[in-house]
Image (cartoon, rainbow, N blue to C red; front, side, top):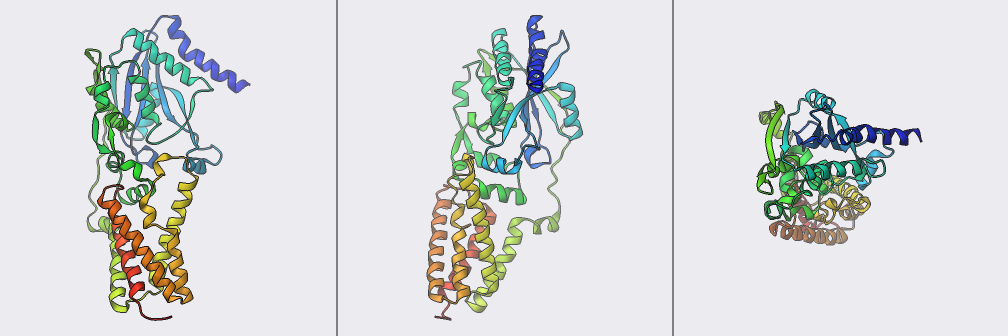
Length: 380
């Protein structure tokens, strides 16, 4: 009960004084650059409400979550993790991003009094204890998309603009922020729904896209943004160096080494051995993990994943047949596996789902492995 009363007291302290004094805040969109952690790599958005007369300076932040939530990681994987709207002072918000060495920029919004009131009323409603929690979705309901919905709800001047094609897919936007094994893993679990061309409205799930589209938007006949201010300079620089040592640690280089080993064994022996069985077993285990994640999750982004054609848990049956000495069964199952890989080529050729370079190398390796089993003449 005390906790509940304190939440309502905070609502009173935040919202009521400005109304009682008849003071409207100046509302701005805050956009933050990428961080080093995976959850911050795509940047962040928040809404600032500054009351120049009283000096109250607040930040409304939809990107908060509690690491102490019971079963935090399982809830995140299942799509059941709740994020929440929180309120911070601008000074505390800025200190955090100074400490993280991340850039922060501000866009002051050109709003009428009525639009200003609508935005603040919406924030007040969403900050109530029963409304502040929401189920997070990376593409469709996150810290940026929530602000997009609120900001653009007060005007219909930009309907034609935001419904234009972005001439890009969700995956292409995401891939612009990631590389290496992070890119490999994310593209493994994300399904084919991310490979459809999206409109500008959907592209604003990313902070930088909301920032740039807002700068192009109109509020009636006036620009939606009156002023842009750099609050903290983005001093982070991308380091593309590293030379040869950096290259050999990438997924493609490591997987190419495995491909070379499999090809050499293929031409030397023409039949499967322990190394081939180990490789197929690891792929099968990875496929089993991916299958379980897709089955238990509520994240729509993971559905319709054609990576299961190569990352297939059923490939373990080929290994079992090999270890059991059942060569005819092994050849049959290997031939069926090659059909799966052939279907995947159609998926990639038709651009139904993105072909990550590392996946291509794995598929070529698997093709040599299964082909070697099909043409092998030893055994019964």
